[in-house]
Amino acid sequence: MKINKIHYLTKKALKGDIDAAKTILRYLSRYQIKAINVSSYLIVYQIIMNLYNILEECKLCNGKCCREGGCIPLYQFDIDELNKVFDNNLLNHFIK
Image 1 (cartoon, one colour):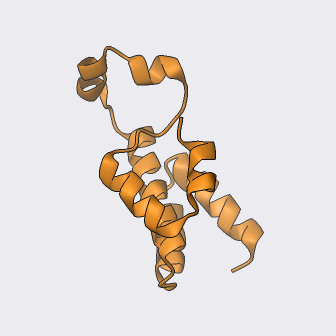
Image 2 (spheres, rainbow, N blue to C red):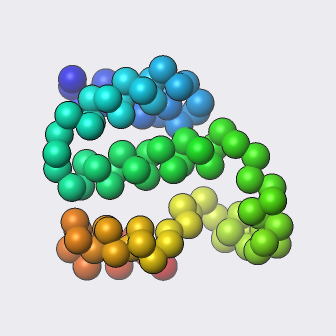
């Protein structure tokens, strides 16, 4: 699959196209590369955040996450997993 197709399917998946999500995740899961596995997890996480009502979770922080911008909340286990895959300098660029 060409990179443009991967990009296109990922964008469709993030907009709620479940078939595109299945296609892209099926394609990515063929590769047993840690960075791709983490990327797949983040794609799934973001699809869920985009498609499901998370009002109850938002009440826990009074909407602080939404006011700060479109960052994906990361938990410590996410950060630990990313540290295993990526250089810390790269992570510092993305994690505020």
